[in-house]
Length: 90
Image (cartoon, rainbow, N blue to C red; front, side, top):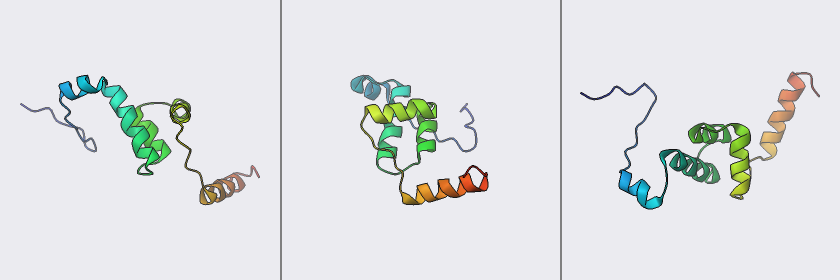
């Protein structure tokens, strides 16, 4: 009998010998995927840290260690300023 997968979860089957050859654990592979997808602008910082199962602070440190620049542009700044104004902090 097959296990039921929770709705919204996708299972990825990776043979153990692939992980062994790459010298990666499942958790390390998740971090590698998260860094790669974030660096390629395929997922947001929040989604990347979620995939990596790390706090925002830990994931930002990992990105810095890997020399991956944060994705923050003028539109992001304007959105943050608008939010701060709405909150009465500016």
